[in-house]
Length: 199
View 1: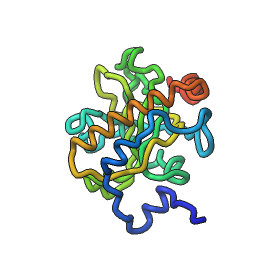
View 2: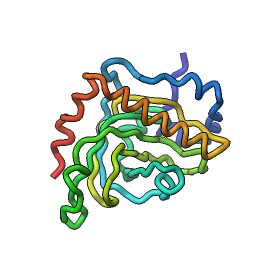
View 3: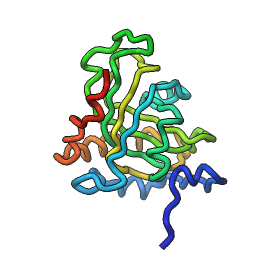
């Protein structure tokens, strides 16, 4: 049996094109993914200061994302495939100047979905990890420390013939993440020590 390449290995040579999302794929998507308890390589802990990305998530797709710096990616890219993942995330209330600028509502541990890959619809050349925290933040949080725990895999990275198809899958990803995280063995990660380390 051939081992699947990790995201980091894929980045070292020419990547095959991501498969196109099909109607059959859309209709066959499950409501809940993953086992009843996270299994290796999960959980995967990530952290880093939020950096500016391409700015397309919020403007173009209605799904604003927080990008982690490249140096925070090895825990994901060394063990997992490109695609969409789910878990929890938390943002520090303090900006890089040490000022408290986010409210308590914005800084609790919240469910998230994460895209790890090259966003083939936009033809990115560099591997990125873009986290969408499922919460309406009152302001942006560039430069703030963000912690995340990735608990499972939703689907592979796909290409799209239309922006509407991509948006539809993103909305499905969010619903699948929320339902998958509602299980007791996943919910307990909301109180993981990884999050209590934030200032």
